[in-house]
Length: 239
Image (cartoon, rainbow, N blue to C red; front, side):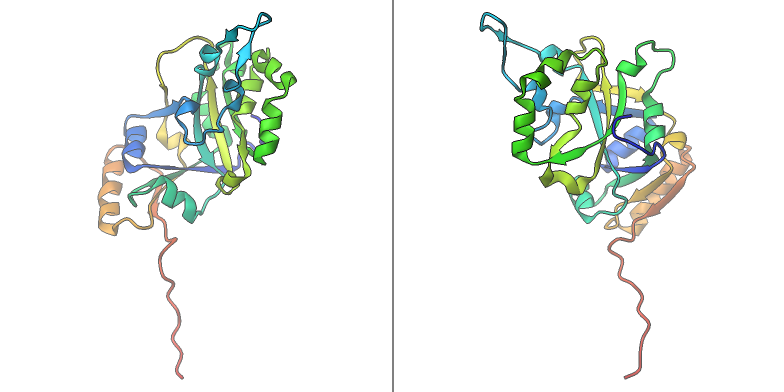
């Protein structure tokens, strides 16, 4: 765990409806290569042009492509996150803890586990600070850090424009080349996802239908719908 002081802190992720059902019904968690994330500042460490002592370009794509991640948040209620990650008003928010999420992908039988499986809290900095940091030769020289943490830590730095996301990232660093852009980890949805919350804008009848499907397929934990946009009931007054 990197930068996380409370392993049992609650964290959340908003899935699209299709991805949520694929994750829960097929019992697998998908981590993708960071180069598919939207922010061009993601993983700046591997975007720096490198040269050898003779001035020849050096490619580190092989190292960059060994990283996979999945984004979570500490924000339990966020209008912005619903609108960003549930654009069709049909998203699903799940709740877990940092400990449970790391445990879901950790393999005790893997002698290299401490070099491969990570979860960390993102910190936010100005754009100029990040550029200065990643152009520091000492930072770049640690790209082959023997603890395997430097490449992972580079994924935990973002610009202040994104600090509303309060992000936590699950990271897998493969120790061999992999042609796949996505890696899957088997999970027990009932052990990992403590609660499931449907988009507040979803039709209640649709919520009932999807809830029944999840129950029929063995999901036992709390299922409800967010009340973020539900108007309060106000007590009337005689005037």
